[in-house]
Amino acid sequence: MRSLSFWMLLGTFAVSLGHRHQDQKTGKCQEQDKQMPEMKKKTVHIKDPEKVEKIICGLIRGGASKLQIITDFDMTLTKFSYNGRRCPTCHNIIDNCKLITEECREKLHKLKEKYYAIEIDPHLTIAEKYPYMVEWYNKSHTLLVSQRLQKDKLAEAVRESDVMLKDGYEVFFEKLHESNIPVFIFSAGIGDILEEVIQQAGVYHSNVKVVSNFMDFDENGIMIGFKGDLIHVYNKNDSALKNTCYFNQLKNNSNIILLGDSLGDLSMADGVSNVEHILKIGFLNDKVEESLEKYMKSYDIVLVRDETLDVANALLKKIL
Image (cartoon, rainbow, N blue to C red; front, side, top):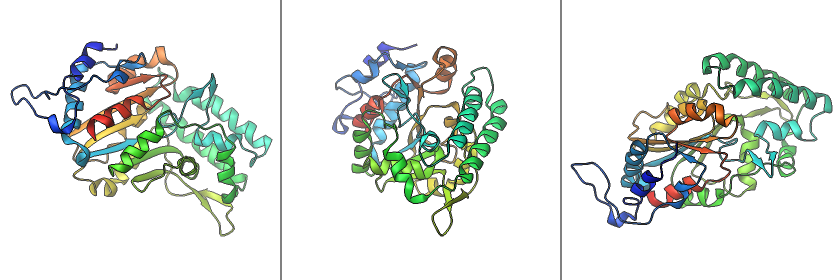
């Protein structure tokens, strides 16, 4: 359910910092600026417009000094599809590259066919999916280790892939960098590939921190495993709690914009103890009809098959 009336309301308060003030009786921002046309796109779905209005109002009042970004990577900052073709995740970049054998590639693709269907099944609970995700990741990672991947070949694999960051990524990263807003990229993908993607795109700035599954290499640069505990799509809450030291350094950054594409991404901010306002934006890319209602109950704003960062950028423009 998309509410245009809400975005008309939003137009009454989303403006420059210089004109901000709050009505103490109603708690609403009383602003006077342009509407946000990005919010009226057909891809935008909102269940509770009044709740979202209050959250955005709080984010605007808090400004840059209180803001931090917590975001997933695959299919959230990167595109799900382009011209009708699926775009690769970090894992897929390796699966499809020339560094692995055809036999290994076939096995990886079979694993994806089996387990991806389980990951996005709207009729299964997260608890039911959880053991299958562990099984999938462990089997895939074991296959990758068997290929003795070379660290110095990963950049080439990324360059030759079809991975694409969402439209508007330059504005997104640059604006956050200019305002020194902490960006926490929390990914169940492969960290080495993720970092290479944003490095090659020229947006791996000093305000960006990546937590993901990082490869482990021997002294010759040959992959021998993965570092630390496994991160998969449905255990991000565990990893979030392990990163409380990072979040504790950002005690003043009590306003959060969270971006994800899975219901498992909703727990990415669990390590933040001092949340004042959090806006959860979810990208729904697959099984839309079956999953939309559940996503709308969980995310404040749901973006259906939206391959842009237009909504996030529009919000940043008002907040920063």
